[in-house]
Amino acid sequence: MDKKITTIAFATDHAAAEVRGKVKEYLSRLGYEVLDFGYDGDGSCDYPDYAAKAAIAVADGQAQKGVLICGTGIGMSIVANKIKGIIAATVWNEDTARLAVQHNHADILCLGSRTSTLRELCLMIKVFLDTEFEERHNERIAKIKELEK
Ligand code: RB5
Picture (cartoon, helix red, strand yellow):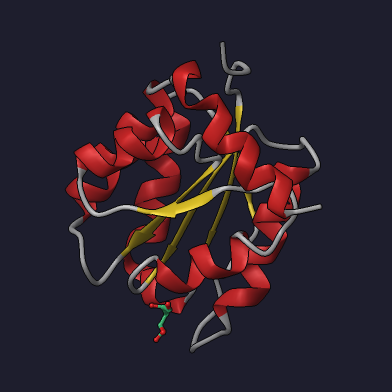
């Protein structure tokens, strides 16, 4: 059984400026506390700065899950996966959002604001947060964790 999710670490880069407020609002409406690690300034920024902060918050246990949005979700996942203990997955539809948890035990969902609509982003987030890991994939996840040593 996965830990109860109460708090979400959230971060975006400038590519997600248009959707970040609405996605944050959506997470709050679902009843989660949102720890917002930026970026909410004007102009462009470097996604590694924000992905790392949010991923560290998940690794430290300040949040149980993370949601990161950049243009494609790819940069965010590359960065988040550098943080020890984190499994981050870029997904592109509801099926991959579900499988990222069921099979890959993803802690962090990485989404693309340039590849998905706001509605699609929200649907993927809901599926990610409502899905539980399937224990039958435990040995594979243990092999991933072993690589971190
Ligand atoms: C920013 O232009 C873009 O490179 C970034 O949002 C992201 O898609 C990187 O993976």
